[in-house]
Image (cartoon, rainbow, N blue to C red; front, side):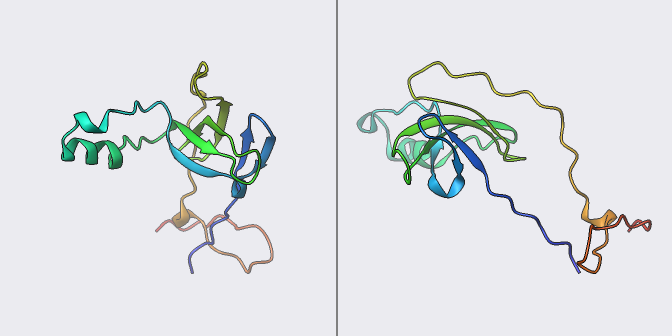
Length: 128
């Protein structure tokens, strides 16, 4: 039996409304992307602009809209590996630097066994 994953709701800081649950927001795109003149691009250049992004591991500046709240757009830093949320800022204002954090130790499912569901998972002494 595989261990179950724990899913946590993100809490996103809207600069206008404060901290809210992720269900109130929609992801917009990577922040800071310059919009080109679509008439000046070839079809392949336009397709590359629309569909190809860096998709880095780590901190990424993103655009979000608070659709179930104030309806306003804003930017924030989000770690694409850990889903940590960093500082938020308004568009066309000074972007804060990406947060600096210590490396994260990831859960290795092979070193743990699933218990009876009544408590914490116990380390498995046997390595596989």
